[in-house]
Image (cartoon, rainbow, N blue to C red):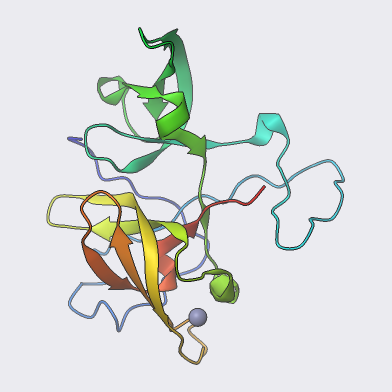
Amino acid sequence: MGKPQRKRERGSPDADADADAEIDPETEILPSKQMSSPVAAPLPLPQDDKDIMPLLQNLQFEARSSRDFAWYDIHTFLAHRATNAGELEVRVRYADFGADEDEWVNVKKAVRVRSIPLESSECMKVHAGDLVLCFREGSNEAVHYDAHVMKIERKLHDVRGCRCLFVVKYDHDNTEEKVHLSRLCRRPKF
Ligand SMILES: [Zn+2]
């Protein structure tokens, strides 16, 4: 997508300065996502490690663009249609993008509830084999891709939070990268 690079808001400052020492912290685009809105009504406690299902009107979604296979937050659903194969497609406006980036996406394959940014305290929730959304910054891209966790090097946490290293393999091109937790979002478990 030809784009303004998407910057997701994040609550806590990035703790990975030393891992990305070659990157000027002033210009680094932080991988981050907006936290979902707090749930207003009282709900039963989550079972095990399941997330509380947000009320329908509070659900936020992300879509995978067919242009670069990256996931972007959806701002608005604009229209829907059925394909010849009988599959539902929706036209979406991406958050922080204009109408020229609107896109038809397949509901079943390319629309889902937004991924959740991982906090330092949640590092033990990530396991080898997990599907995660990983922020990747290249020469002309800074986007979130689906990836699978291949290996985890657990480290002692310090004042900066999680220092563990996660070897991830991107689904769309099979490349591997070693990243810190702050680059990862997890999939909600309902
Ligand atoms: Zn950790």
